[in-house]
Length: 85
Image 1: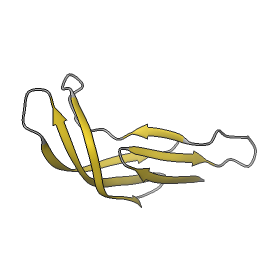
Image 2 (image 1 turned 45 degrees about the vertical axis):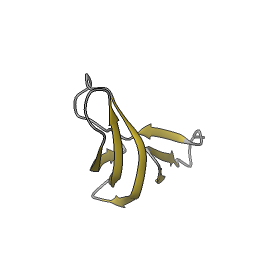
Image 3 (image 1 turned 90 degrees about the vertical axis):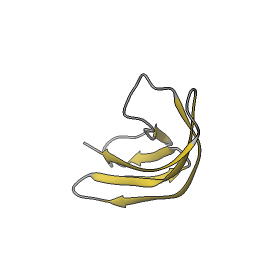
């Protein structure tokens, strides 16, 4: 079982396994670009949501303001698939 929530640009979670202790406050940064060579930074996130999708997968979504080095700032709608094994 997992407990999860979004907080700005981070997906926070805790995996609960009654047979083993687990650390608190694990997180993953939400991906803002598909290209690892592009330098972008999310400056704010709004209307974020997290819904169960299927199996052990979740959809994280919302709007982000993105700042780039060489292009104008932009607002994007993002969807990230997050899975637990």
